[in-house]
Image 1 (cartoon, rainbow, N blue to C red):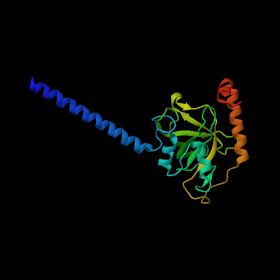
Image 2: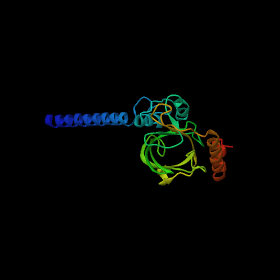
Image 3: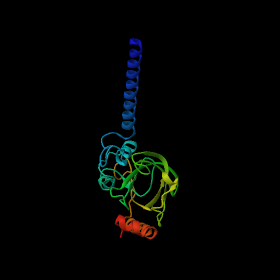
Length: 207
Protein backbone atom coordinates (compact mmCIF):
# COMPACT_ATOMS: atom_id res chain seq x y z
CA UNK A 1 0.00 0.00 0.00
CA UNK A 2 2.86 2.31 0.88
CA UNK A 3 4.45 1.64 -2.52
CA UNK A 4 1.14 2.43 -4.24
CA UNK A 5 0.84 5.80 -2.45
CA UNK A 6 4.44 6.60 -3.33
CA UNK A 7 3.80 5.85 -7.00
CA UNK A 8 0.74 8.12 -6.99
CA UNK A 9 2.74 10.93 -5.34
CA UNK A 10 5.55 10.60 -7.90
CA UNK A 11 3.00 10.71 -10.71
CA UNK A 12 1.37 13.86 -9.32
CA UNK A 13 4.74 15.58 -8.93
CA UNK A 14 5.70 14.68 -12.49
CA UNK A 15 2.40 16.03 -13.82
CA UNK A 16 2.85 19.27 -11.88
CA UNK A 17 6.35 19.62 -13.26
CA UNK A 18 5.16 19.11 -16.83
CA UNK A 19 2.38 21.66 -16.33
CA UNK A 20 4.83 24.22 -14.95
CA UNK A 21 7.16 23.62 -17.91
CA UNK A 22 4.27 24.13 -20.33
CA UNK A 23 3.38 27.41 -18.64
CA UNK A 24 7.00 28.51 -18.85
CA UNK A 25 7.16 27.67 -22.56
CA UNK A 26 3.96 29.62 -23.16
CA UNK A 27 5.36 32.68 -21.40
CA UNK A 28 8.59 32.46 -23.37
CA UNK A 29 6.71 32.14 -26.64
CA UNK A 30 4.48 35.09 -25.84
CA UNK A 31 7.50 37.21 -25.01
CA UNK A 32 9.28 36.19 -28.21
CA UNK A 33 6.23 36.86 -30.34
CA UNK A 34 5.64 40.41 -29.26
CA UNK A 35 6.85 41.29 -25.79
CA UNK A 36 4.90 41.49 -22.58
CA UNK A 37 5.09 45.24 -22.00
CA UNK A 38 1.83 46.01 -23.82
CA UNK A 39 0.38 42.54 -24.19
CA UNK A 40 -2.29 43.19 -21.58
CA UNK A 41 -2.82 46.85 -22.40
CA UNK A 42 -6.26 47.98 -23.52
CA UNK A 43 -8.18 44.84 -22.98
CA UNK A 44 -6.86 42.06 -20.89
CA UNK A 45 -4.34 39.44 -21.67
CA UNK A 46 -4.03 39.14 -25.43
CA UNK A 47 -1.46 40.27 -27.94
CA UNK A 48 -2.04 43.71 -29.45
CA UNK A 49 -0.92 44.82 -32.90
CA UNK A 50 1.41 47.52 -31.55
CA UNK A 51 4.03 45.47 -29.65
CA UNK A 52 4.14 42.87 -32.42
CA UNK A 53 4.66 45.48 -35.15
CA UNK A 54 7.33 47.16 -33.06
CA UNK A 55 9.19 43.91 -32.48
CA UNK A 56 9.30 42.67 -36.07
CA UNK A 57 9.90 46.08 -37.69
CA UNK A 58 12.35 47.53 -35.17
CA UNK A 59 10.41 50.81 -35.21
CA UNK A 60 10.38 51.95 -31.61
CA UNK A 61 7.05 53.72 -31.27
CA UNK A 62 4.63 53.09 -28.44
CA UNK A 63 1.01 53.98 -27.87
CA UNK A 64 -2.21 53.27 -29.74
CA UNK A 65 -1.87 52.39 -33.41
CA UNK A 66 -3.67 55.53 -34.60
CA UNK A 67 -0.91 57.67 -33.02
CA UNK A 68 1.98 55.98 -34.83
CA UNK A 69 1.80 58.07 -37.99
CA UNK A 70 1.96 61.33 -36.06
CA UNK A 71 4.60 60.06 -33.65
CA UNK A 72 6.82 58.99 -36.54
CA UNK A 73 7.07 62.57 -37.87
CA UNK A 74 10.62 63.80 -37.37
CA UNK A 75 11.76 60.43 -36.02
CA UNK A 76 11.31 58.03 -38.94
CA UNK A 77 10.97 58.38 -42.69
CA UNK A 78 7.38 58.16 -43.88
CA UNK A 79 5.82 57.68 -47.26
CA UNK A 80 2.99 56.31 -49.37
CA UNK A 81 4.79 53.31 -50.88
CA UNK A 82 5.08 49.90 -49.22
CA UNK A 83 8.53 48.46 -48.56
CA UNK A 84 9.60 45.26 -46.88
CA UNK A 85 10.04 45.97 -43.17
CA UNK A 86 7.91 49.12 -43.19
CA UNK A 87 4.89 49.51 -40.96
CA UNK A 88 1.56 50.18 -42.64
CA UNK A 89 -0.47 52.51 -40.42
CA UNK A 90 -4.24 52.12 -40.79
CA UNK A 91 -6.54 54.90 -39.64
CA UNK A 92 -9.47 54.30 -37.30
CA UNK A 93 -12.41 53.15 -39.40
CA UNK A 94 -15.82 51.65 -38.78
CA UNK A 95 -15.83 49.94 -35.41
CA UNK A 96 -12.07 50.36 -35.03
CA UNK A 97 -11.36 53.33 -32.80
CA UNK A 98 -7.65 52.72 -32.22
CA UNK A 99 -6.44 52.09 -35.76
CA UNK A 100 -4.07 49.26 -36.65
CA UNK A 101 -0.44 48.69 -37.58
CA UNK A 102 1.02 45.86 -39.65
CA UNK A 103 4.52 45.12 -40.93
CA UNK A 104 5.13 44.62 -44.64
CA UNK A 105 6.76 41.24 -45.20
CA UNK A 106 6.77 41.02 -49.01
CA UNK A 107 5.97 43.05 -52.12
CA UNK A 108 4.02 40.85 -54.55
CA UNK A 109 3.23 43.42 -57.23
CA UNK A 110 2.31 47.09 -57.59
CA UNK A 111 -1.00 46.63 -55.78
CA UNK A 112 -0.44 43.55 -53.62
CA UNK A 113 1.67 43.04 -50.52
CA UNK A 114 1.96 40.48 -47.77
CA UNK A 115 1.80 41.69 -44.19
CA UNK A 116 2.38 40.21 -40.75
CA UNK A 117 0.31 41.51 -37.87
CA UNK A 118 -1.50 40.64 -34.65
CA UNK A 119 -5.03 40.98 -33.30
CA UNK A 120 -6.84 41.31 -36.63
CA UNK A 121 -8.86 38.28 -37.75
CA UNK A 122 -8.84 36.59 -34.36
CA UNK A 123 -8.41 38.25 -31.02
CA UNK A 124 -4.80 38.26 -29.89
CA UNK A 125 -3.53 35.95 -32.63
CA UNK A 126 -0.66 36.53 -35.03
CA UNK A 127 -1.09 36.25 -38.80
CA UNK A 128 2.04 36.01 -40.91
CA UNK A 129 2.35 36.79 -44.63
CA UNK A 130 -1.31 37.47 -45.36
CA UNK A 131 -2.56 39.54 -48.27
CA UNK A 132 -3.37 43.24 -48.39
CA UNK A 133 -4.27 44.91 -51.68
CA UNK A 134 -4.38 48.53 -52.75
CA UNK A 135 -7.95 49.45 -53.70
CA UNK A 136 -7.49 53.22 -53.83
CA UNK A 137 -8.90 54.95 -56.94
CA UNK A 138 -5.56 56.72 -57.51
CA UNK A 139 -3.45 53.58 -56.94
CA UNK A 140 -1.64 55.38 -54.12
CA UNK A 141 -2.13 52.91 -51.24
CA UNK A 142 -4.46 55.29 -49.41
CA UNK A 143 -6.97 52.48 -48.86
CA UNK A 144 -6.63 48.71 -48.69
CA UNK A 145 -8.52 45.49 -48.28
CA UNK A 146 -6.97 43.01 -45.86
CA UNK A 147 -7.15 39.21 -45.60
CA UNK A 148 -9.74 38.13 -43.03
CA UNK A 149 -9.24 34.56 -41.86
CA UNK A 150 -12.82 33.65 -40.80
CA UNK A 151 -14.05 34.04 -44.39
CA UNK A 152 -10.81 32.80 -45.99
CA UNK A 153 -10.77 35.84 -48.25
CA UNK A 154 -10.13 39.56 -48.32
CA UNK A 155 -12.44 41.54 -46.08
CA UNK A 156 -14.97 43.80 -47.76
CA UNK A 157 -14.05 47.03 -45.97
CA UNK A 158 -11.79 49.58 -47.63
CA UNK A 159 -9.45 50.54 -44.80
CA UNK A 160 -7.93 54.06 -44.96
CA UNK A 161 -4.13 54.06 -44.72
CA UNK A 162 -2.24 57.00 -43.26
CA UNK A 163 0.94 55.78 -44.94
CA UNK A 164 4.02 53.64 -44.39
CA UNK A 165 6.62 54.19 -41.69
CA UNK A 166 10.16 53.14 -42.62
CA UNK A 167 12.88 52.16 -40.16
CA UNK A 168 15.08 55.00 -41.39
CA UNK A 169 15.78 58.56 -40.37
CA UNK A 170 13.60 61.26 -41.96
CA UNK A 171 14.81 62.33 -45.38
CA UNK A 172 16.47 58.98 -46.09
CA UNK A 173 14.33 57.75 -48.92
CA UNK A 174 10.86 58.65 -47.69
CA UNK A 175 8.39 60.04 -50.21
CA UNK A 176 5.79 62.72 -49.68
CA UNK A 177 2.23 61.74 -48.84
CA UNK A 178 -0.51 63.58 -50.68
CA UNK A 179 -2.70 64.39 -47.70
CA UNK A 180 -5.62 65.96 -49.67
CA UNK A 181 -5.77 62.87 -51.89
CA UNK A 182 -5.61 60.66 -48.82
CA UNK A 183 -8.48 62.52 -47.15
CA UNK A 184 -10.56 62.24 -50.33
CA UNK A 185 -9.86 58.50 -50.61
CA UNK A 186 -10.79 57.96 -46.98
CA UNK A 187 -14.07 59.83 -47.49
CA UNK A 188 -14.82 57.63 -50.51
CA UNK A 189 -14.04 54.50 -48.48
CA UNK A 190 -16.50 55.54 -45.77
CA UNK A 191 -19.16 56.27 -48.41
CA UNK A 192 -18.70 52.79 -49.92
CA UNK A 193 -19.10 51.17 -46.51
CA UNK A 194 -22.27 53.19 -45.86
CA UNK A 195 -23.80 51.94 -49.11
CA UNK A 196 -22.90 48.31 -48.35
CA UNK A 197 -24.11 48.34 -44.75
CA UNK A 198 -26.07 51.50 -43.82
CA UNK A 199 -27.26 50.12 -40.46
CA UNK A 200 -23.72 49.07 -39.55
CA UNK A 201 -22.44 52.48 -40.59
CA UNK A 202 -24.95 54.19 -38.28
CA UNK A 203 -23.89 51.95 -35.40
CA UNK A 204 -20.21 52.60 -36.16
CA UNK A 205 -20.80 56.34 -36.28
CA UNK A 206 -19.85 56.79 -39.95
CA UNK A 207 -22.81 59.01 -40.76
